[in-house]
Structures are given as C-alpha cells and as structure tokens.
Length: 89
Image 1 (tube, helix red, strand yellow):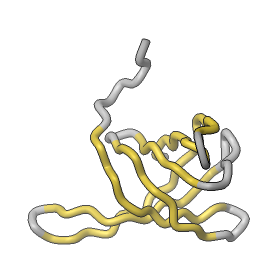
Image 2 (cartoon, rainbow, N blue to C red):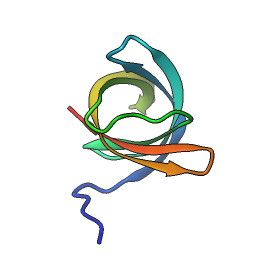
Image 3 (cartoon, rainbow, N blue to C red):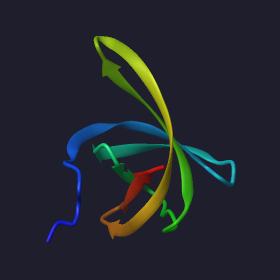
C-alpha cells in the first residue's frame, strides 16, 4: 500500500547535494512531489541525515534555482547504488 500523500512526478535530472559534514556531490533525482524527492547515489545516506539540495526548475518560462533543506526518510540498496527519499523541510 502506498503511504504517499502527494503525487510523484518523474524528475530525471542532476541534483547538487550538500551534507552537514561539508561534502558536496552531484547525484541523480528520480522523482519529485510537493513534499519531497526520490534520489539515487552511488554511496549510501543515513536515515535522519539532513541535507541541502540544489536544482533548477523552469517556472513561467524562466530558469529558477531551488535551494532547499531535506531529511533522509528511507534508504534502499539497489543494483549499483542506493535509492533514498528526502522530505523537504
């Protein structure tokens, strides 16, 4: 049973991820909703970890950079990496 409250939309693009330990990585987004984002990375994240995500959206024909905080809600091992979900704060 799907417990999601908000509809997910495919969001296949690169995301800049900044972690609280000061490390920056470019990772891949899978999907997005109004409350969070599904992501894929080669290295795992920790459930409860706080992150800063930076990505671009097109709004009214203009490119807009989004910089938002999030919390890792789940992590799952998949072939060649990790899928994880982030709830926007």
